Length: 225
Image 1: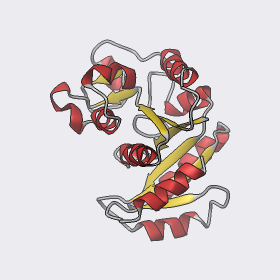
Image 2: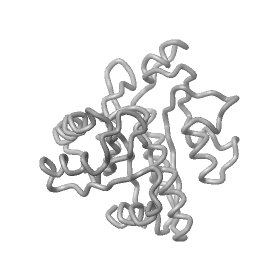
Image 3: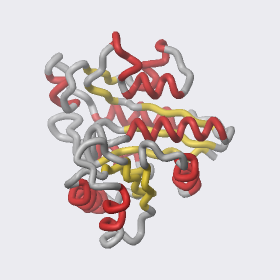
């Protein structure tokens, strides 16, 4: 059975695509079915496609550029929140259109063992349009999430605020992944030790960027889905 999962985060440039790439790689090694989409992306450039999140997902899945619309149909050049990036080109993202795109992909998944990833844009409260945010999309798709947070100064507060909002929407958080931050890093161990004082029902995993034990962590994340 393929397990759909939505990967979101506390903000932008936290580590969603890094985690998506690692899960894709590990599923291939374990001979599990794997597919992934990132319906909305801003800051997208055709000439530098493989430096974008969509390009990284394409390459990880060994897909061609012609498949880009199957992964990220809503692509915007401006490196801004999707609502603003769309408005700059006189467009508006329809939440129901994004929902239907995601649901259709889920309904057409093959009868195999594996994972289907939907990667969000920005954080849980990133605006999609004038009315809705990513958290609304997660709610109507009705699949569990992995919440990616950082180890930067301030990430603990951001994580707890994010979890509070997710709980109000009754969203199933399968796990929290602390992706080691490049800047203002206080350490994944310190961050986890603080978070577990306030979170006792959600597994928390530490993902160090230069760790040699990434497969061990990814296996735990996969097994718990």
